Structures are given as C-alpha cells and as structure tokens.
Amino acid sequence: MPHFRKGRVIDKSPNTEFPLLPFLLMLACGAPLIAVVVAEWLGTPIPGAGNALGFVFLAIFGMPFFGLLFLIRLVNRRFTSASSRKNSQSRSLGDRLKLLITASLSVGLFLLLSMVYEGEDLFSSLKKGLIASFLCAIIGLPIFLYAVIRKWVLDGIALWISRRIIKDSPESQQPQSTESTIPSSMHTSYQNLNSEANLDNTARNAIEAAFDASNVGNIQQIAGLALGYANVNFKATTDRGVYQVRFCRAQPRERIEDEILFLGSIQKSGFPAAYPIRRNDGDFITEYGDEKVMIYDFIKGETPVVCIQSAGQIGLALGRLSTFPVPEGYRSTPLIDFQDLLDFRDEMRSREEDRSEFFEEFSRQTDALQSHLPFDLPRGFVHGDVFPDNTIFKDGTLAALIDFEDSAIDVLIFDIGMALLGFGYQQEKIDPTLVVAMLRGYQSVRPLSIAEKEALPLVMRWCAHGMAFWHLRHFVKTPNQRQHRRIHELQQLVRGLEGEDGDKLRTVLLS
Image 1: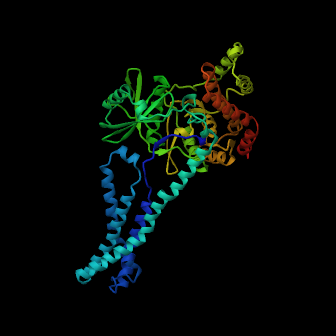
Image 2: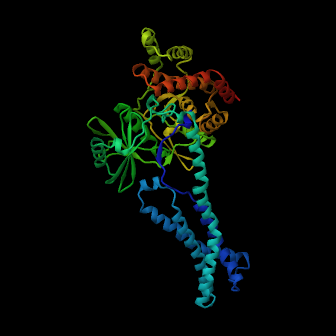
Image 3: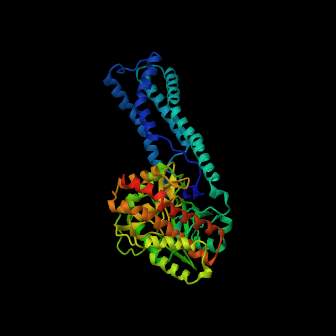
C-alpha cells in the first residue's frame, strides 16, 4: 500500500527540538525562589523574602537576567539568513546546554549581588552564588535530558519501527518498487537518483545558470535527490542557505506558470509549502537548452509514517487549501479527462491483439463509473497529488506540501479522495480511524455537504481508476513488470471501493 512505500528523504541531518519557552519560564519564575531557598539554607536570608510582596519584587528583579537570554537569541536570529531559519527551526543540543549553563549562572549572579548588597564579603558571596548555580543546573538538567532521550532514544525507536514496517511490507520485497501508489504526474515510477548519476556537465551548467540569475548565493555543493520520475531534483548548498532545484520535465510551461501563480497567491498566508524563488529579473523559470529550471525553498524533514496524527494534519491542510480563491489567470484543468478513458477503451476494443490482461477489468470499471461523471459538486483549486511522497513532516508536524504541478481546478473533494488513497489505508484495507482523522481535520475548516459525503467513495474510485488508466496506456506500449504490478494493485483498490472498503467508507461518512 502507498504508505508502506519507501518515501522521499528530504534531509535527515540531526535536529533536536527543545521545550525552550517552558524552560525559560520555569527558570525566570524559579530563579528568585531558588536564590531565596539557597540563601536561607546557607544562613544568609535575603530581606523581604518572607512575605509575598518581597517575593514578587525578587521575581521582577530576576526577570532581566532571562530577558537577556531572549535578547541574545533575537540578535542571533537577526544575523541568520531567512533560509537558514526555515531549514533549522530548532536549536542544537549544544545550544541548549549553553542556555542551561547561562541560566544557572544567572541565578548565582542574582544571589551574589543580593549578598554583596547586604554587606557580606565577596569571597563568601561568590562561593554561595556558585552553589546556587549548581543547584539550578541540577533542577534544569532533567528538561535537557528529556530532549536527549526524546531525540536519541524515543525517536530512534520510532524510526526503527517505521523502517521495519517498510522493510517487512510485501512491496519492499520486490525489486524496483520504490514508487508510491499514486505519485506525481499520473504515474508511480520513482527513480533512485544520486549526484553521480544525475549531475552531468549539462545539469551542472543549467543549475549554475539558474543561480547566477538569482540572488541566492554562490554554489558550494550539489547533490541529487530522489524526488520524482519525469522531473529531476537536486539539493544545492550555497553560502546563503540550502535550496531545492527542480528540472521541470513533466509539464509544459503553461502549467508551471499556473503553479507559480497559485503559490504566489497563498505565500503570505503561511500555508506550509515549498515556494519557488524569484530570479533577479522577476521570472521564476530559467531556460537552459531544453531544460526549465526552478529554485525552491529546501524544506528539511521526512516522508511520514501514516497514522492518525499525520492523516489529521493532511486533512486540515487540505481544508485550508480548499478555501483559497483561484487566482485570476489560472487556467489548468485536470490532467486526465474521462473522455480520455472512453477513447482508449474504444481504441483497444478495435485492437484485440494488443489488449492486456487488465483490459476487461478496465473496461468494466470504466463503464461502471461513466454514469456518475461528471460530478456536480463544489469546485475550486486542488493539489491533485497529496500522497505521503509529496508531503514533508518534521518531528511529527506537517512542514510542507510539495509538487503542485498536477494542481488544477476540479471538484474540491478530489483532493480528499486522492489523499485517502495514500493516508487512509492500513494492511491493504481502508482504516476508518484514519478516514475519521482526515475528515475531522478537513471539516474543521470547510464542512462537507451531504452530497459531497455521498460522492466521496465514487471520487476515490475515479482517482484510483484514473491512475490505472495512466499506467495501462503506457503498459500497452511498453510492457514492464513494475507497471504490471501497479495496475494490478490499483484495480484491486477500485474493486475494494466497490465492495467492503466502500461500505466502510460510507458508514464513516454518513454516521
């Protein structure tokens, strides 16, 4: 099934999240209290500590020390490039350790100043201040250790489990099966790309031409990425940041311009996506020979393991996406029209010698869907290809939807139907809990009408059947084992949605 496929590896460089705000708040409020307690224990009470008003004074007095930490962080962010902030939103464990030490010394300094002010000698005050710092460090250490355990132990266990799931799935046991069920551009082939295989002189020259025309720094390193089939993608590191470079080979320039137009219209909304970077001349596409090259923000993260949390976040993102207006001038229509299937069916009936073993099932499923299309439902912008391979998650949170090249104006629930094919199945069966999670996320933004809920099982069948058609059309011309397997899987999905899986889906939708 799609979510067990080996997915996109965007960047797995170590990164550690740390509960920074709770940590600072704890120390900001606790520093005066720690100082008071230590002072009492050492026999040097701080005046005013015995009443509430005095403690409030101490808390206010201690806040500037922790305000200084925030100031240091803001100064650091001021001199960090925007791209670096996007690609490294969390600080390293080393930074956390420095923060812990700084905060602890601040507590000691607070106590030291208080004692010196009260007339105690400097050496004695310094000794007691260091003791206070040590005690503060011990108090803050468990939170630091939590970050270490979370990233190096708990996340390591989760990663091991997810890898075992991928390794043990039936698809991973077959050669050349690194594609997802319904990936970009109406195909499922998924190349294993690397810098040696893809970065020839022509590709390097095209990338350099794109960077020369853009204000993104000087190239330091280029590496190939396994991000597509018709398109070829690279990761480029410059002295200003890290970027994704896409060679746009799957779609004509008109569709690429529509993708740029839509992403530009939503960029200020904060929607999680990888946005293209404008050239110095205002254009986004660099044409070099036959290549169309674009530069995007590089988003760190990984392909998610399908679960309730990821399905819910995808539903929420699609709900938000459905509310954006189609920008003026946007023209793209769905890549496959039902008339294409009818023409293909009629052509194959007249060429009996070229029929594949899948043709009769394809013809039956086409006839079964024909009376239901087109759908008379709300229309708008759809991504058209929201599968795990086209999403980037970071620490369990959706960081970006990517690959908008299949986007179009279509019925809005097309995105739900397509996404459920990738995020709604476990063990080759539709999982009602995943469906509920996605629909709950989606409907928190845009509630579905009764007509949309009733039509969703048919829309899912159309999504899977359209994919099968794309493969079958190419398989007839060039038979191969990979597409043979994929057509079989997709037709099996359609049969399931005609039967038990469809019944489960309707029960969830109408309950």
